[in-house]
Image (tube, rainbow, N blue to C red; front, side, top):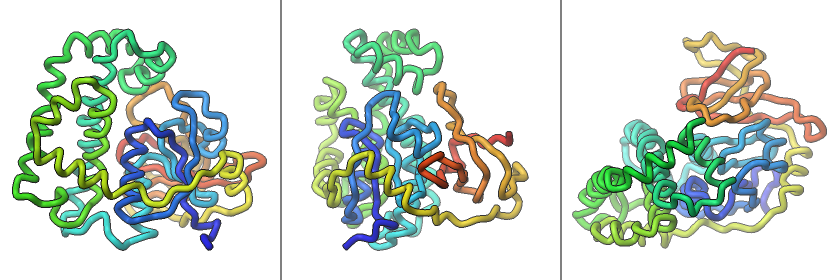
Length: 314
């Protein structure tokens, strides 16, 4: 029987491309996890009490520890479940560097392609929500520009797809060789998003036979063993446990952070999101952990990556 304190809970929704990345990561390791479905757009009243305001998808919960951003989630899964590894070759550092591109410029390009091609067919509330998140305050004009620039956006996407196709031309099963790696999930989710959400996706992807073969191989990994959980039960789980995050700050912190300092954390790109406030519990080059009192839920620790997030003293 699974220990409730170590059970993996993923707050997500089926159409989320970034959640698909994490679901594939579960499949690589063959993990069991609990599936909590959340709304696609704000408000998210059963999620933000756990995160302190963070609203992006997905969020992983293990007991009273809350992990935000797939970068942070995948690192924590590797720490807790090291075999089979997400890094089956010696180039782990380079793979993390590459993941900053797949989650940054490459995914941003896919978002512009999908949203721009949808045009006026997008529901207004969804268009505004995602437009603000990925295009900023001037989101309406950003959507119009994306629609006008579709041929250019497609050309920009075809180049990296050709690179991936070339990487696979020797017949290897996965991007790094015979074993799946985090980078397979980190590129697959962009392909999954394009195929499923842009009407021109299947046609464009068919130009790259090695990539399509790889895509089928990654899809066959599955999503591990999921079982549903209600958001109420997830909150009750957090209420009944204490966080297990370690305490401390690594030497040479460039911001002079110290345990117990009052801080806020939010994504480095402004999408009009609420910062998460609390006291600093842990920080190193890769991770920042904020401890917060969540009212009747109790004490929670919210984990973020350092890369891509802004930490500010309050």
